[in-house]
Length: 276
Image (cartoon, rainbow, N blue to C red; front, side, top):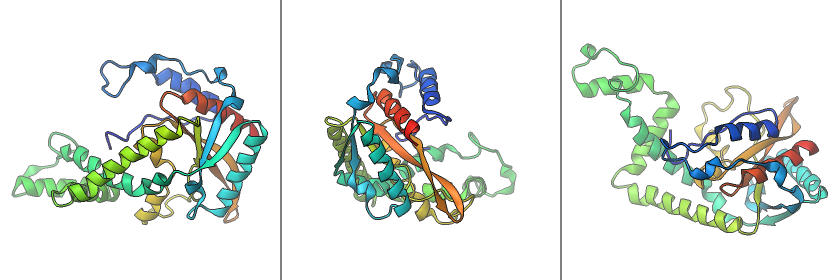
């Protein structure tokens, strides 16, 4: 979808399983330009003393927009982590407030570029060119039929921000904001080992709920976007449940560390797993 944002991830039942899988897929690949020789280093969370970790909580992630019930559970979990002997401090990371507009400028631009190859001749489903008068009509017909509504939305938005009249105003500004995010995160990790946030600002939606509300869907990515934007490892761990519309719904807590520090994430993740 988006070359500079895509990351490999796994879904597991336990933190230990996630660590096992990471060690299975982490190897350096000479044929992958995104691969690094540091990948050959085994991740060992057992070598990390959780009490040696310093945790940062950006106050911006607890501001307006976060469901009060999720905030309450998050703060309860934070207190339990503190009682386990782990240092947690609140910090300010104002750049996080710009994560959503930053992401939804850069990501559609990359989507628009990457999906341009799907002309439904060389790539994608091939239709019958005899039913259209020109090749342009064929492209229009096939791309209209075979791209979903969200793909079309992102292609159009990406084409808009990459156009000559908008490129500098939108795309370049978003890239500069991304550079600032990376710099601010690097500064944070000079003092702290892990940045802790809720995983999402709202309770999990029911199937197809808000499917026709793209803005609400985009805002749900508020806390998870920075990891992709700054190329950081992150993990979501289940954090209790809360009652919503008569049901107990699961919520998560996100752990985000500096590059090549996955072992710290797993060490703290195992502690949280034991607390909840």
